[in-house]
Image 1 (cartoon, rainbow, N blue to C red):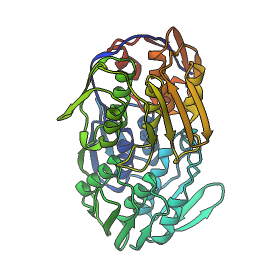
Image 2 (image 1 turned 90 degrees about the horizontal axis):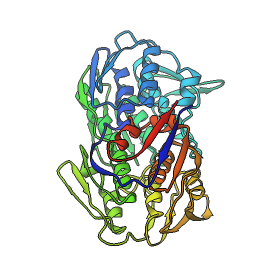
Image 3 (image 1 turned 90 degrees about the vertical axis):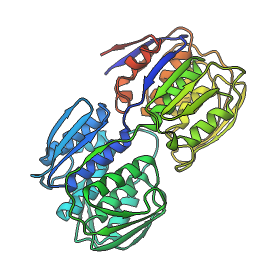
Length: 416
């Protein structure tokens, strides 16, 4: 188990680039299962979740080469097998193998996936969608899906990102047209669609909540570049603002950041944004408390909320947070309370942060990926020394975050 030892109170400054999207990388890598020829994916972040997913593909029989943020996947000799239990429970993204496996082989098997401890994330949306496409599902020690797929109209009961992605991939093999309504529209869902089109799929409505996939498609290998990670961009924005530094963040896609940038502006954070760059400036007036409500894209994402929660400890007044998506998302606020933050809880989905607060160093265990990033930012703001355990949870979604923050003036030591 790794840990970060952080000496706080440092003002961050300088320039940093944003990595490729973790969530897009997992979906696009899952889609390579659909091709019987080689795919080349660029701008892939070198993070633990990607490494775990590549291991799953290798177990399936794919030949993998991963170097310098480029992955070559040759799935020619793939075989239909289930994801090993230990990998499935470690990586929720493993569920994304079900749709393409069902499309290519007519069957898929999986166990209930694991991932972050942020609340219940049932897979009913996936299974109900597979059933509507003609899949027969048996639930025993593992979940088995098989059948010849036929296009149909699927209305998702909730706007599930991975559910949308799985059904898109399965629909590429379905006979006729599949219409997915209430589809997720996140940037990484769009990235998956664009990659599938590059492979030969026919998809209309990309970026809207109504997708139409015409099938069956004979998909081929393709070259593709993963989009930038909008959550990582927000992470660096929050780190710069919370430490009251000045930072240039490059490689961003501003089209994906309307909600978080609008929230920064409401909190009185001074910045400029143009081209592929955000420049956070030193504060000219106190930050102010706001109301924060999460939603589905293009609204503020639940993964971005903890980054604004830690920034809220440094604003004047109360910041109210309503995150209705996951009941366990408030875990990071308990950690910030250990550091001296003034937090009151309404229920499992509501909290109020009162600021500004002088945070102090302490010892904390990271409950989940985004909480880990929030706690790490809190430790940069705090006076004194913090020890953050379970640093490998942060490594799941951020590439060398400690080293990159150190290049901006942080003082973080990794101890394995």
